[in-house]
Image (cartoon, rainbow, N blue to C red; front, side, top):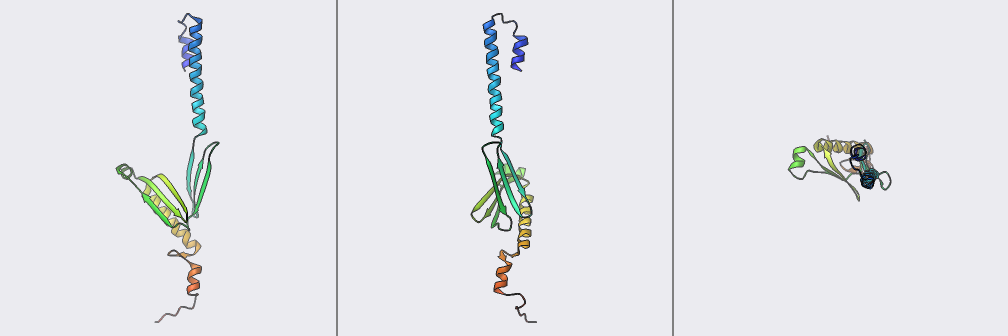
Length: 156
C-alpha cells in the first residue's frame, strides 16, 4: 500500500534522490513486515485436544520447531480436577481441567463450558473403566483373586 501510494502520489517530489530514498525506505518497511509475518507463521502453534472413548490426546505442533503429542488412557486416570479462578472465569464459564495419570499431569487450559466438559470426561472415564473391568478403582482380576467367582456363599 505504501509503495503504491508513493509511486502515484509522491510525484510532486522533484529530487530524484529523495524519491528513491523514500521508495527504498517503504520497500524496506514492506520487507520487514513480510518477514515478521513469516516468523509468526512459522511459530504458529497448533494446539488440539482430542477426547475419544479410550484416550485423551493433546497435540502441540508448529510448522518447524515443535511436535509434541501426549496421550493418556482414560481408564488409568487417577484424578480429574476442574479449576475456575476468578470472577471472569466463573462468569464466562471457562477454566482449566487437570488430568492426572500416574506420573503424568495433563493441563487443559481455557476449556469453554467447563462443567459439562468435566462431567463428560468423568462419564467417559467410568465407561472406559467398566470396559477394562474396573469396579470402584479395583480391577476385576484382583477381585477374582480375592473371591473367585462362584465361591461366595450367602445366607438366605
